[in-house]
Structure formats: C-alpha cells, structure tokens
Image (cartoon, rainbow, N blue to C red; front, side, top):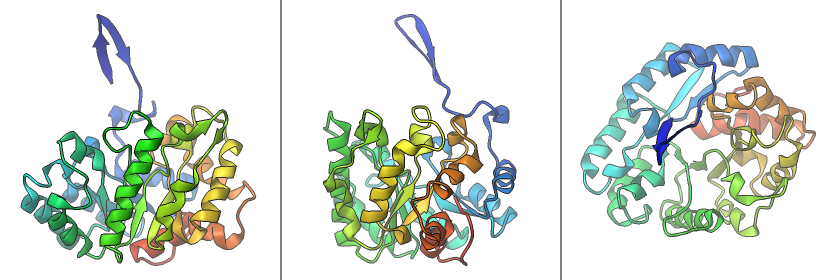
Length: 294
C-alpha cells in the first residue's frame, strides 16, 4: 500500500515479499502445505481478497480433500439489499458446496449499520443459521470506543447476544484475539471477561499468534505460551483449532514453524495436540478426521 500525507510518500508491505505478482493461488497453497506436512486447509475469505464464491469452489474442486473454503458475505449490503445477500449465500453453500460462512462486522459498521446481532440482520441470520454450516467471525472493536480492548470486549457482548438467539449454530472466532491490544510488556494480559463467550460449548477459537505478533516475538514464541495455557483452561482443546492466516504469516515465519511452535511447546498432551492440529476443525466442518490442518 502506498499513500501520501503532506507531500510525503509512505508505504506498508502487508504481503510476504516472495509472492509472484502479489498472488497466492491454490497451487501455491498446496505446495506450502506439502512442504510443511499439512493435510488440509480451510480457506479464509475477506472482502479485500474478493467475493467470488465460484472461484473458491473451483479451488476446492481442484484439490478435493485438501482444500475447504468459507464463503464471503457482503456485510455492508445487509439491510439495504438483504434478499440479494441471502441468495448469494444460499448459492455459495447449496450450489457451490462451500463449507462455512465468514462474517466480518467491521464492513457492516463502515456502511453505518447498527449492532449486527438483530434488527435488520435477523432475516439474514435466520437464513444463514438454517444452512447447517459453521459461522466464523472476525471481530474487531465495536464502534464508539477509543480503547481497542474495551471495544473488542463490547463486540464479544454482541456475539454473546447472537449466540443466545441462535444457540444451535456452531461458531468460531478467527485469528484469536487482537493480541497487541492486550500486550503488557512481553506478556498478554487477558482479562477474565474475555472468556465469558466460551460458556457456550458451540463456540470455537483459533490459535493463531505468529501472524499477529511475529514481528515482536521470535520463534518459538515462548512469550505467548501462558496465553495458550489460558486458552486450554478456559476454552479447552476440543474447541481450539490451529490457524495461520497463510500466506500473510510468512512475513514472520515459515508455515512449518507456525505449526512446530505448538507441537514443541510442551504444554499439550497427545489428545489436545490432535484436537488443535486438525480434529477440532474436522469436527466443526463435519468432515473426516485429519492430521494437521490449518
């Protein structure tokens, strides 16, 4: 990204520098998976990366059993054009056979939408939860907060209300927490309130530290081990799943390192490791058990 402020040019590199033509197609993904010993991957989506469910389905069909995919949602159009959003979602899941739904509240907030758990969002959620696939939330700070920590905790309150309304819907939070907001020196100080949503046994959480903190801490990221212990205690390995945010995390570590730090930290027994590295994801997606999956 390049921008100019007061006549000065600024740039920020958010992709790893080895992407050819700033692209990371399914073949590149499979090559990385083979090299790192990863059996299967669930493709995350974002409006900034495109809204093409048919393309994602083509990636999945090209590599059956290796690639699975979420479908994007046009969050900003819910309310103004809800019927279209529902039609596109239905086509992505029923026709293209994608495996999960990704919902990013920030895009709805940018369009001026209110809290996303009810009101004009109710018809969308009734349709989405009726499709029988898990819903992955990428949460930031709720609007109106200057402190990102308070804003994120407020967003968790919205999620709690949503889960109370749709108690049977399996859900997960992507990328873990906004870790930088909770840094105190070289430790993550996670307040007790942050664990409240996991009173719901159908809520899951990604373990995904390198992409968030890999520029601050070195492999094997011993600074975040206490946070992983807290996740094991409050969430439990059967509701934790390994996440990487490939290829973005390659700015800081290799794909193999992003799994090895968990496998070698010494905090997990064999069953817990199996859950985080594939079994939780397989159970959540309703597919056959797998080995490492991220």
